[in-house]
Length: 363
Ligand code: PEP
Ligand code: MN
Image (cartoon, rainbow, N blue to C red; front, side, top):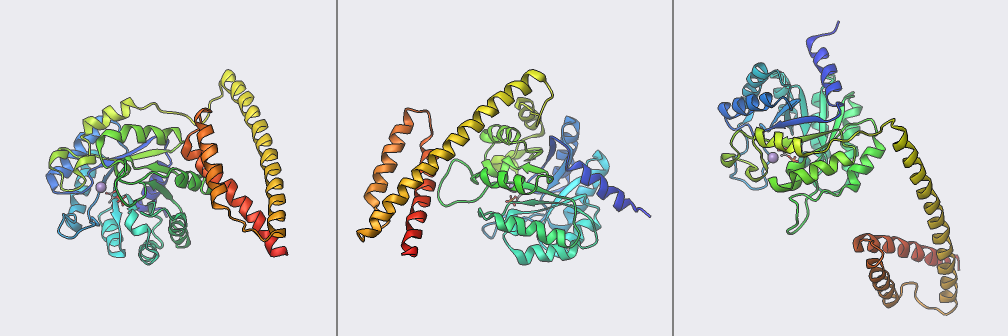
């Protein structure tokens, strides 16, 4: 017989797959009044599907506000009763899982600092066994796609079927434009590997400030993400954590209104015809590129052969500098980004070296 929990889990599994899912709420549940006020204001916008709040906060340095702990779960339960919004909470240990579920939390998420640690993920997975809870997994803080995949596998092994992914960016050394570099290629690769798993963007933790939230949110929509998790607070100026990046519920509405929502496809005949025509051109260019690269590698092989005959090293640093310099300069006049050309030439050069090296081994 289906229990209320089963019914809820099925509903949550469907909900996280919703196109343009919006999860919002405070970084941290600070006190009952703040949670309830934020939840009511979010509900009144009519734009939010799930209420989020951190209850246990992993902090980089000691002495900061580490969350209100278990008692905040009852504030969230109260907020759910008042608004009808399902709730989502971050869990980092098996005890968190048990406590959150005992307060009827609807969705759990695993934070970036937890996804990096297979022991923690296993501990959480063991506590989730047999629950069929819906779980969202944030990317690990470091750009290691295998850890993200490993976390999915550990949950799937204990029977968790309803998993969504959250892209919150990756930490890096030194100052950068973003609090956490987006490195879009990683979530794009995860979308390729797990096409049926919803990919949700967390622009708040990527940006670290309000000003760039729109740009990152829009970019995620353009990349066919299915939803957004955005931190909001009834009064961000007094927030105890992540003050700079939290928006008011009203600012959330303004942000969502400023975005252009996209669909994955449309049946419009003109669009489909034009798209197919342009894609045919892309396929032709890709074929030409492959043939050109293959010819280039044949020349590299010949160079490798004469290097061997003359006992000359495969790597010629000054020639490599010259190639890079020449192609980057040339790319400027061809409307090609220098970062792209640098990575492209590096990939070509590594392959040339591999070919020339393999000749060495055959000798
Ligand atoms: C959060 O969502 O408040 C949080 C702590 O995020 P992350 O795990 O991405 O740092
Ligand atoms: Mn936060």
